[in-house]
Length: 126
Image 1 (cartoon, rainbow, N blue to C red):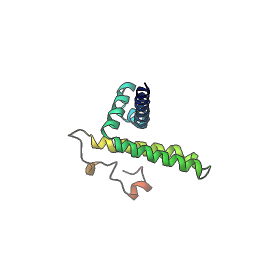
Image 2 (image 1 turned 120 degrees about the vertical axis):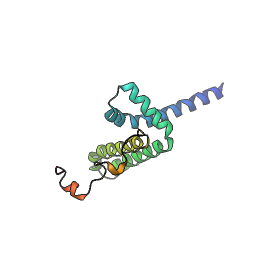
Image 3 (image 1 turned 30 degrees about the vertical axis):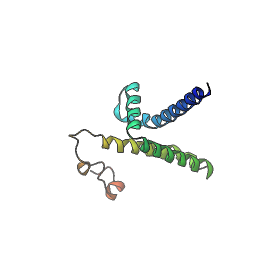
Image 4 (image 1 turned 135 degrees about the horizontal axis):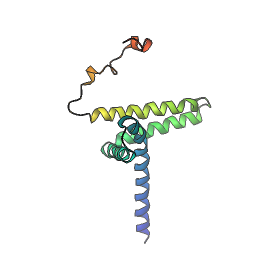
């Protein structure tokens, strides 16, 4: 039964890819939604199923940053973690805005998004 073995190994490989893509979305979903772990994993899996190319592109970018951090210089691994966290959190924020509730305020009214250079220099001034 070699075809059964090939089929099961292909299924296992795709399940591993799906689990790895879901793992990218779990941590920012856990931080933002403040739900239980199982509900967060379900949300992350739903986001990956609904946006497979987005999740795959995110994984390729994380892999690219990983390769650059490992190959280029020993100093970059110190910054690697923050780069990946910002990238994954921004990706989750983009998907959260895509699936925002119908009554949510538009992006033009969001004070967090509409900050300028003055707010960058003086973040404590409102």
